[in-house]
Length: 115
Image (tube, rainbow, N blue to C red; front, side, top):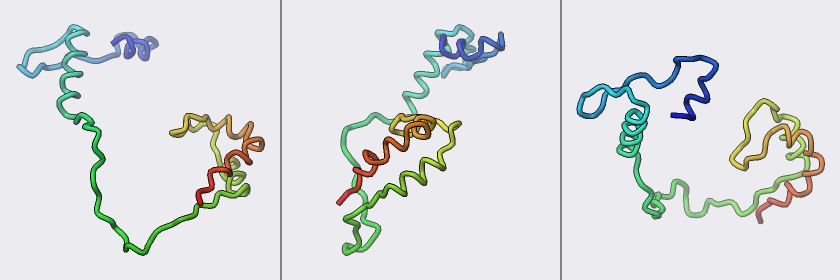
């Protein structure tokens, strides 16, 4: 609840309102609300069993790709299209970093060509 409170400091009184417990009682205490939300989310999500699911192949057996080419021009084109206001991608690299240092990163980024 401290995290939520830190987000709403500018707007006092804003936060998680009263919640109804599974038994139907009203939860007002922050700890009780957090516990109820945690119990709910634990009940609706699944635990990872470490096994990858099997998927049926969607294309013919003779369809595949062995090569992905990433050229310097591809990297430059992407860097120019980057929007500084966008959040980082899955790699955690901020867009503004790519804009600022992209020209120095062209060579390392083209190494990811898969053969």
